[in-house]
Image (spheres, rainbow, N blue to C red):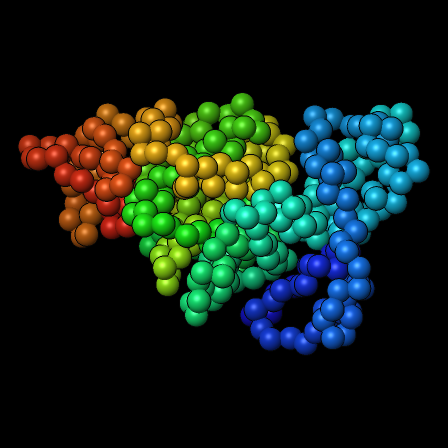
Length: 355
């Protein structure tokens, strides 16, 4: 399907969509790009100004944002990139939402040489996971650290083909292409869950629960999901977080399975998606490449809603009921089966069974 191109005033942001298209299309959308594809000037978005607005707890006086003579022009460029900015002569300036047109420049400027070093932003696509898969199928190595993000997915999915639905502009929808460096699928999923939980907690006072293998909850309601897939030696870490979604707009069931969803906004938290993506990439880089197994296990202990609970699972077609007693970061969940042994369950082949 055709994607709706993202407009950006930053000429380094070549608009991406899934079907082949000519460089003249890009020139029409990005005035700083010539018809032969060469950049005519450097990106114009003022990253420091955007960062100050993202991190501000409330309206900021124009004087606090830099040279009063240049701030209005810089704010205008941010608005051209899709940012929603409120301004008041007495109260100051407040960023309501960061526009898609500035996501790539902002993330790339802050994550050089690590996860987020290259960013592709879509207004609409089938799914970020599918775009990432297409990037790595021929040669994965050049794309390690690349992030694919979308405002809306037409065919978002979770584990085992389950649908992931979110209205346009209401969720953080992204896939991170990571070098697994020999890590098992279980460790990749665990690190991703812990990183996302930390990112959300760093921006709110919410207590995020991790429901093994891949769900994040607040007070028992699903806030986010993670999908990790291995393709051609790369790990595709798909993340979906309900940011400003109204739970009433979400499906109440997935097949015969009831779904109880929530969002950050529904819990009273106003969080910008770009700011959440920035925090997620920081935490994910640390969890994947710097945290040891014991640290990840401790993170899970602090947030698990399954530890010492009686659960039923489907593992490779076999249904088991027992008590969750531990987690091996590399090998999976440890379940003490009722009237049976302790078994290790891998995230790739196990799902929880809900009554």
